[in-house]
Length: 288
Image (cartoon, rainbow, N blue to C red; front, side, top):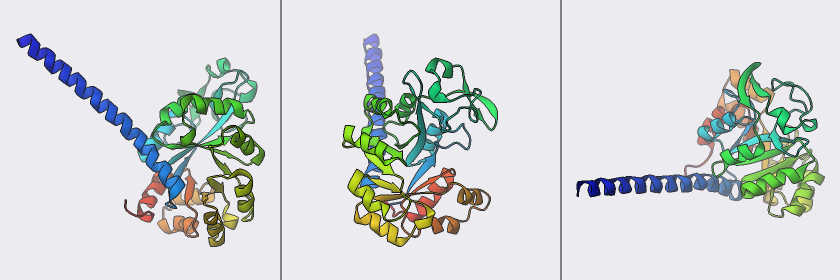
């Protein structure tokens, strides 16, 4: 009888562990569902971490992605390139010279070669491998939206990874080349797109040609007129805090400096300072 009680206790604990794991799994997917809902159906301020949260970790690394998730960022921006054998990796520059222990053009290299190379952080070898897109999306799945900055024209390989991981509704495809985005839309009609625009009147053209969810705008035409035009077509406006503004905020984190960027209606901010902007978002958005 004593052994029977022990057995029942063991089964009970095992069932509890399985149940907790199940609900944790569901809650993680609820997390990205909530972000997607806000992205598509509200004009609340959303924050995107440029090359993921790379203040403590190498840019475009799995560690930087996890840091962004932990911070509560809405979207991570990561850059993708494809090797000669068709493997999609995270890499911003055309060459790997600046960010890794190696050198050369990633798209002229094989994945076997890249496995021998590690990422740099603040000029030092981090001993961290260059991640593949598959690894990145497996980590982000269910937790956070992903902006894929297409640094390649090998889009079939990129789309194949998105399909394999079943995260089409968690990914935004970004490119300055509208033809690339049109190709993606033709093959994946429900894909979320974000074209780069260079003036306000590009917004209407983008809507007609691509039916995107967001448009990337620049400070030069970050105006109320631009925001109202985007809202007319049901589009979010994405703007960068990168560069001079982020540099100033890093030494002088005054909220009013940041408010200048979003007061005209821009609703998605990409930044190298995600922790600062997450704090600001809590002051801007209505309480749930």
